[in-house]
Image 1 (cartoon, rainbow, N blue to C red):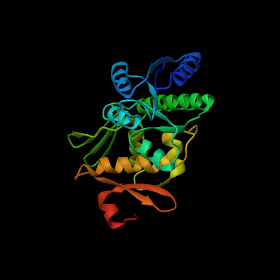
Image 2: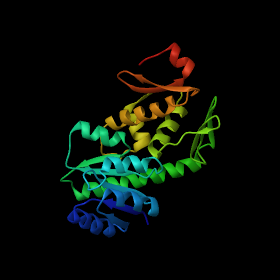
Image 3: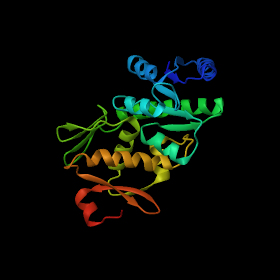
Image 4: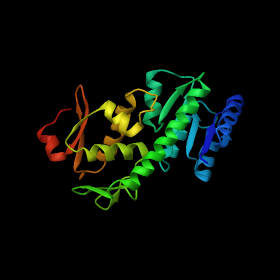
Length: 239
């Protein structure tokens, strides 16, 4: 039984989600503040978090930042703010999806199920995939779900790990955003392809933190992205 944490300061929303998710046979934990969300998430290690943006003491963005520093479960952010800027910020700090209030309980339930299915697929694919991919000093170990640059570990949430794995497994190939969405987020993803750009940006920043990183992710205009060796990227820079 999957465990879901609902963090929202509105008692009506907490009760609504608790009843709906328990009906779907999930174990449900509820909290009313940001600090409680962080504490309960670290203690209970839920499989997924539904997180309100505007909460007392610590808002959803800061909660997301704090949790993403050490946890990788899917996070669906709820907010009354629906601008593109708000969505980009939410995705940039680590949310996997973003829903505006008022929301459809049926759609939210479907998104929860879709995210949990994707996590399950990632776990199964890690077992089924070849144990390791090696590009010079970059080692991606599917069995251990780890990424190392030489002797130094590179900590990545599930989505960024899956994204890096997919790009490196197609080293040198131009891959469309639609293909990345399908392989990393699944064919039941509800959002738009902007989420790919946000995750690519975050992954690039982390790779750039390693001066000896042997790969670089290039933008292929009108198509999507290509992962290449650094030497090739310098010779044929596209963005």
